[in-house]
Length: 398
Image (cartoon, rainbow, N blue to C red; front, top):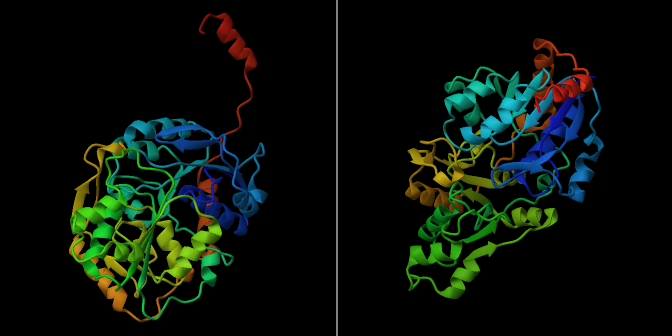
């Protein structure tokens, strides 16, 4: 069987990159590929360093049978975020020198990539991204070897077993890192404009990794900014009842329970490669209300609500992407209207399309791998050259 060495983050049950990587690895394995899952590095802020963390037990239980690295492989797949050109150089240039065939799995949230990044991508034999939006941006920028392969789901996903939402959908949920890209401050503003006290509830589950600058407004400050010091029609106990803010790490079971308690998943994000919490909510049969941030567009159905993009807004420079990088902009009033529409919609939301089932996605992954291996002649594994190294030292080149 074809052997894939998949080097990616997989060790954390709560990290989005790890979640997606484990799903893709499982889908490849289920499709008949031999997968060697390896995690050598982690990203702290913007620097890749050696992985010294112990894998979460839940992750070992899920993919422990794939955690191996043998000497021989047919395809090497490396995976990391598509950072700005300053950082991409440190990942793509070394990857372009790896023994062929070599491939790259990545995703990004901005609406454009730099020319030098695309040039380096084209030096790699094959690239896959998890959403159509990423695919379209790369192709428009001149990428010649990119494929869109959506995130797969499995029959053992606990969200599939959630009971249906309430017929009168009052409970809204958002999950994510509190950061400018996800714009959860806009979600709070839209909620407070859409509803009066007692009409609906909003739960915000904030991620455990803080934004790198404390100047980004906290949820509590956003509420005061929106309502004013006098809270304009809201009393403190009403705010505490209708807007719940959860900080800290929850167990996987607790996260599923959050989705079970919600009727509608909502997002005000400006850029997503996938949007895993929205994906999980869709698996759980919840209605999704989201701005057109990229990734969610692929899996929404007729009973969901997509707030259209209205153009571009500059990315926060602290993301350190290319100069001129932008996110998707949208009309806040449209988001307000979408929340109100979802609150009054009593239709049973549609579940995730079977197109995203691991059997279908696994077939796509297997075809992508096999075509890459067939198209790219393998390079022989180089023999160790310790004598040459010793001669290099003796010659004074060191």
